[in-house]
Length: 195
Length: 407
Image (cartoon, rainbow over all chains, first blue to last red; front, side, top):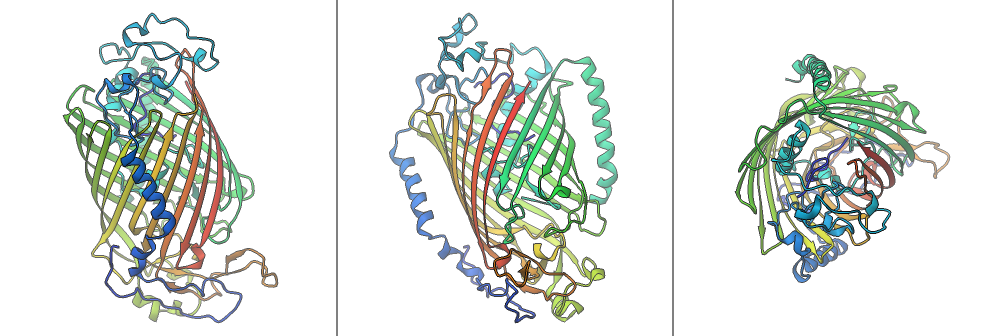
């Protein structure tokens, strides 16, 4: 059961290498049968990686994102800005934004949950909205309010969200926030090899 | 270490189970999650054979909180494949997390250990590799320090191991040391940088034996498959900068670059490729670079949409492969399958892959007043992999649907 790093804890929340070296040896040890595939592969040397990175589609996509990054003024709502902006999970949103129902969507993006914290405890039911009607309107939990071991641990774990794994596996980093899983454990394994 | 873990891991698992059961009776602190994943995979084996498959994975996990600083996790899931039925497998395991530091403390300490065992319905199948049951184990200890509210540093060590139940197959273990930092600049731009060093033993076939040995012309003699392997240390380093920020009021994005390089790489080391049907845990080890970007948006109310794209440039070890042949030699349109191991020629080739991947996912989390969350989701994934070895030239299109319920 994969756990998304950076997701607020349950129920609370809130808040070319230019390899100048020789081409790697390419050693065909046989074959001249037309039915055999695999032997016609062009040899790609170790020094070609830089050029391939200049693939126009990739470069274009990169530039678009870079321009978006530099040119679009990003801002979140006032409520979110009141707290220090910290994004340890890398999704582009403030980790400290309140998410009282722990659904992964910050409160200020949800109708019916845009309730000032002080008034949250006495908030009445929101307008008629099939989604909002499902929401709870409890207060944002703090360590002072936590009573059970579960609540205490959730807050402690949230503080450690950036250090619960390292990024050495580049593929799993890519899929971490996407929900792309063949099994609920987050890996897709066939015959002893996991993808 | 690995060999000791064969005895140690089941013992740890039993201890965790017993302690969890005891604790569960004393404390109401727990949460439970059920999930049901189902989907279509256009290329199950991720190679040029393009085997289509569909699967269903029901699963459950239970988290227990014996103390405010600890979490015990038990998981179990079964993956059912509709065509390659014997490939269906059961995954179960246990884990322990300890967080002794308070959330308001500047210093945060985190440690975890997980054990997972995968059991296939049947081993030694006629797929492109020989499946075998395995145990995965990982452990991590890390320390974080909050210098300022928007500046955090972290460091840690981790250990990851895979232990195959077939004693002949070499086990794999890797140690990682990493350091990283995260800071916010210019209001809402988050810059995260991480670097790490990895080391671990690996088993490879020296090229001298490949060229002058008995396996030069035809196949790999069964009694030589693993006995010719030699052991050395595989060391590598990586660094990965990432920038993330909001775009507008309801959308966030990130851009991540990563580079990994081997240290003192043995250029004559050879690993068994996928098409040989022999398992080598290091066939997937690579150096090179990767760049990925993702955009997450809440523009549509109650819906989380994530679009991601990535590009990988990977240089692998020299790989021993067995050419694919047509399943039906008389039909040029029949699928490519590995030829018989003992009668077909093998070849060695450097492997260099370029992979492009695009993914789109949707999820609708529904939270109830009582704190339960139900989340249906859909993910679409397209991968294009081009390789210097035709065996690894492939595309894959997969669709995954998921429904989870957290109680």
